[in-house]
Length: 173
Image 1 (cartoon, rainbow, N blue to C red):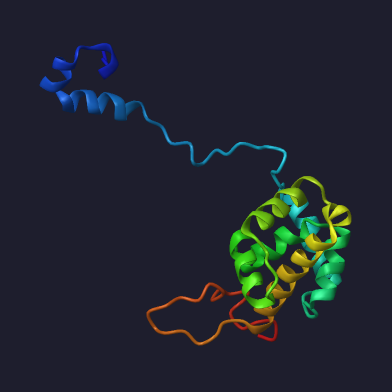
Image 2 (image 1 turned 90 degrees about the vertical axis):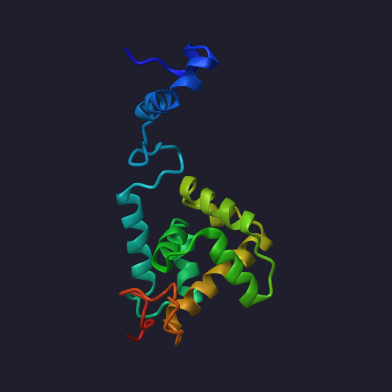
């Protein structure tokens, strides 16, 4: 019968620590394959619908300009998630680059919050404040610029974040 450290006096643990360590470790389970499905969970079908909205507004990804992407976002704000997925960026990463490139303060907290909002309310952009719309526009402009440019030359011992099959050459490749 397995005994645990909390069931015995400390002197027994000292005398045979490995047995108690094995007992505890043997009961530990990892559930990294299972995730909670909360209200912010995006199904494949929802993601695919937003992807198709972005695809339609950008003429099959041949015209990925800020105005086209913003129009797609107005139709379905979940397009923001699709855009981030294409880049492979987290909301804070996109906010950081948008702040650097636009000069507008786009906080990581704002980006996380907006990312959460669009998962729950697909028309989130309609009720956004003027400042929020400017911040979203800055993130969109940054994303479009990154997608358009593709991968810049990097040192052999470095890996560029966009050096992947769908973004390596930019939109022209």
